[in-house]
Image 1 (cartoon, helix red, strand yellow):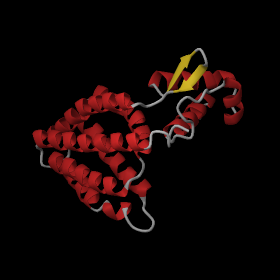
Image 2 (cartoon, helix red, strand yellow; image 1 turned 45 degrees about the vertical axis):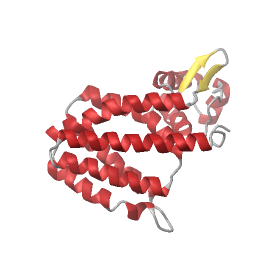
Image 3 (spheres, helix red, strand yellow; image 1 turned 45 degrees about the horizontal axis):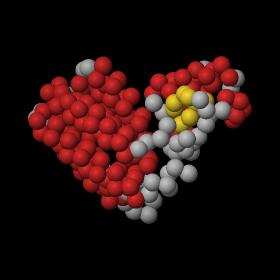
Length: 218
């Protein structure tokens, strides 16, 4: 892996996981030493992060961007537009057997979420497989790329909302409903199931953000 790729991946992960809080100045000398790369590949990595909206360049240097309630609203507006359309296309073009298998796995997802040792990584991996299956089914590389770019910010918001077992269990059922509608080849139902899921996710994220705004901002 090239030095700039390595620096980009490390910084992106630190921002998404909130190890680098909003407002953190990413000083070149400090980050070069921390990541073990020279300043040229670090600048390349910072340029990519700024292009993605995870950092911003200004008078103080490159700074980790904040996420406000307005930002969350705007991201979910775009998410609804893209994901509802993608679900409808997947219902028209996707492999019914694949989505039916994902539906069955998602119905068993509460086993991964609850219990003494929740396997949340396995749950998120399963949701990631549903996303990937939809991306592949729509046969539209531009729409798929737009959704991948958006998901960078959505993962960051998901971490902000915390791993609430009750919400994750409900979300698993909502994902199962989306997979079921796609498997049934019903575009309108797939679109409606997606809109319902996004509405409930947005309500939960905003409630969490309002209750604990300082917790994630250092």
